[in-house]
Amino acid sequence: MKAFQVKAPHDYQVADIDVPTAAAEEVLVRVAFAGICGSDMHIIHGDNAFVRFPRITGHEFAGVVEAVGDGVQNVAVGDRVCIDPVISCGECYPCRIGRPNVCSSLEVIGVHRNGGFEESVAVPAANVHHLPDHIGLDAAALVEPYTIAANVLDRMQPHPGDRLMVLGAGVIGLTILQMALAKGIEDVIVTDVINERLEAANQLGATHVFNSREQDIEQEVLALTQGEGVPLIADAACVPALLPQMLRLASPAGRIGLLGFSVQPSELVQLEVIKKELTLVGSRLNNRKFPEVLELMASGQLDPLALVSHRLPLNDMPSAIDMLDHRPEEARKVLIQISA
Image 1 (cartoon, rainbow, N blue to C red):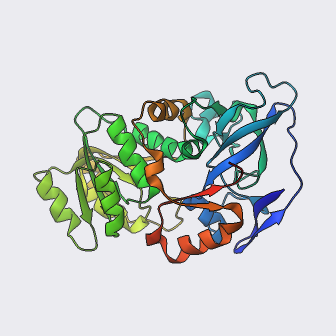
Image 2: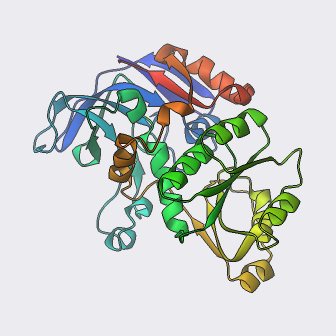
C-alpha cells in the first residue's frame, strides 16, 4: 500500500509499504482524508523534538474501520470514524488529575507512531470516535484542529462578555475564531500579515480584523478597548517575539493562551505580568475534546470545509509540501484524499 514517509529531516517520499495489522485492542482504519498540519511541516523540517524517525506522519484523519483486533468491543468493521491522536498511560500525575494530553509518557499518532498519511493505519480502539451520519469523512478529518481550539479556549477560562484577540489567521487561528463564536464569545479580534487570511476571518465572523504589517496593532486595539486591553489573547501566530506585545495588550486579569513549540526564548517583562495579575497558559493537543467538537460540527455551529483550500491525492504530497513551504499565502487547509 501507499504511504507518505519521512525518513529523516528533508528526506521524504510516497512509498510502498506493508499493510499494518490490528493488534489486540486496536482497529485498522482505511483512511479517507487526512489534513496537513503545521506540525507535520515541522517534522519534515526537523523542527519537532518529539518525533521518532522514520515516520509516517498525519494526525488529522478520518476513515472507515476495515478490521478489529482481539478485545475490541466498541468498534465494528464498516464504522465511520475519526481518531484522537493523543495516547496516554492513565497512571502518571497528569493523567490522574485529568490532563492526559500532557501525560508523562505521551505518544501522539503521526509523531511517536505512524499516522494517517497512509492507506490503512492501526490505531488504539480507545482513540476512535464514531461519526454522526451527516458529517462527511472530509469534514471529520478536520475535527482534530478544532480540538486544539477548544483546548486553548478552555485553558483560558472565558467569562461571559469577554473579548478575544487571536494572533494569526492561519488554520488554527480560524478554528479558534469559529470555536469561540460557537462557545458564545461574540467579540473576536483577529490579526495577521496576509490580507487574504484576514478576509477569511472576516467571512467567518470576526468582529474586527487588523493587518499587523499595515496597522499599529497596539494603537488600534487599545483605541477599540478604550485603553483597557483584551481579556483573552490566543497566540496562533506562535512567534516568540510577539509575547511582549501580548503582555501589553492584555487587560488586567487577562489570560494569554500559548500554542507554539518554538525553542527560541521570549522576552518577558515581569512587571507587566504582576501589575495586571495576568495568567499565561500553555495548551498542547487536546484534553478529550473530540465529543464536544463532533457535537458542535453536527449542529452546524462549525464549518470545517470553509477552511479547505486544496484537495489533493496522496501522490501529490511532495507538491503540497512545496506549496506550503514556498507559497503559504495560496493555501489554508490542504486536505489529502487517500481512499474516499
